[in-house]
Length: 384
Ligand SMILES: Cc1ncc(COP(=O)(O)O)c(C=O)c1O
Image (cartoon, rainbow, N blue to C red):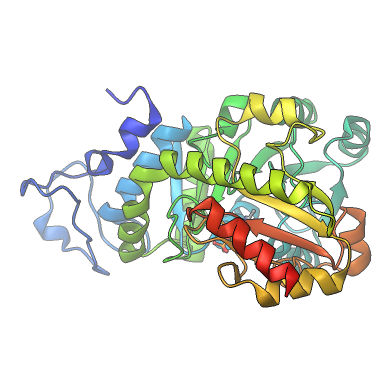
């Protein structure tokens, strides 16, 4: 019935775990902490919303279906999802292998796990398979984690190859799929054990909520994430599930439009003399362009631009009338930020330089506005 993902996304209420006899198009928001055990006689018994809630379960069922997974947990933020992954897989003194080009919040969380639980974090360039194999061979790595595309460097990682290599050394492989989303790329199809994503971004799509989700490939891993989500209180509240569900049916058309707008703007910026470089996987000159096209149906509308000077980058942001200076991405409004100042401030300058990010790098998240309005805005902002 739901052979194609967009059909499932347009019928979220059908994924509800219990029947609602009202015929309402939207499944009710069960905004309750507790459920009366005496009043339930179905197969599934609810007792407390931290453990389980029908509204949240509807979203978990949908994500399980579209990612081809065995189970899912929806969490209260995207970073809580990553914390839940670490809490599930790692123990004190574990080793983890992470792509060095990762979200600043993930980097900060890794520091916390390192300091508190003596976790050894091996950072590597996941384009370099020899380096990866060397680390996997010489250490007992329990978990391998990467984003693809990476944020902010926009590298494309070969998920199938990294998955095969991780499993060869008995490590679990998790992919942060926040940028691509499941409409575009499904990491479990490439062999990953977990796919996780911040639903704050493209999936909710309108910047109205902060949330996340993780899906697991096997029943055993799914039971583990549910156990730790309940133990650590990671679960998402039902009201936020409702806000996310409002954006979901339009995910595909939004992703198409984000990509189209972003490509036009990236092509325009490439020709400007105040721009040193544009890094965007949808551009043919991107070093992993072919892989990007193979792994993803739509390229997310996020790219990085190196201005010829820090002053020019700052001038553009200051004078722009449409682009807000905001962190996050995937919303209907276009926004820019200097990763070194905002989303990746937890990195040192040297750590950022190692992944190709400087103070004059500006990350663009292109929204759904008229593209000519955006180009005119860029022109006036750099001329002022
Ligand atoms: C790639 C990536 N993963 C995870 C997160 C964390 O998500 P949240 O902000 O919803 O906690 C972010 C946030 O920007 C991100 O960019």
